[in-house]
Image 1 (cartoon, rainbow, N blue to C red):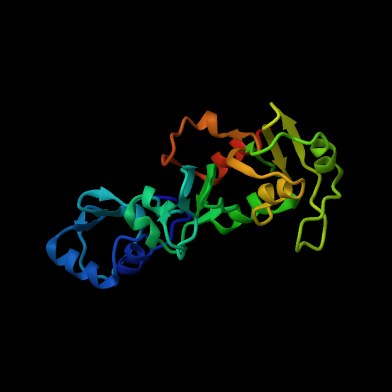
Image 2 (image 1 turned 45 degrees about the vertical axis):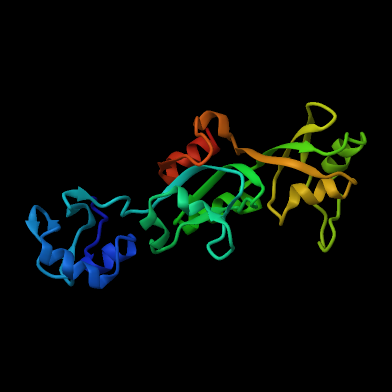
Length: 243
């Protein structure tokens, strides 16, 4: 048991972790499915430590918080409200009902693939998205048309003003691999920013993949599309911002 672990009501704990509604817990207790510190649970209102609870002889998963490194596949949606296949369908079903909720860190649109962090840690989410933290995001981009030759300088200048924005984009680094294949590193996160930046040059993004968050690369995770791995906030930050 962690020294900082606090007791809470059994039904509230299980509900917040997405296992079921509070009314379900009463039935599970009667069925003998829940134990606390090795003894049968006695009441939904019983005060418990999460580390001592077992549901069908299994420990509760990630009661201290959940942070996921995920390889987002093509065609999946980060929102809970939009139509289409949700990213949450690649996780255990109960995780979508956790409280606080799991949220993607910097959403990727339906047609964008690659590295995505999903967490219920609000402080971690803010740390990863705030420009003040200087955590870059790198994207592998395939373009419909050859580069015109001025994109590297334009993106690096910090003067590009996108439609409907009131301030120019921060300087970004463009690495050219071929006439239609590039890598673009951003230091901020705006709505559809990569697509809008190339649209401003008269080009169109055909494929878009987030390849890096800070120093963490999608390749290094060894995750296939739709796969994920659970980590901790501290371990994640060590990968993203190594000393």
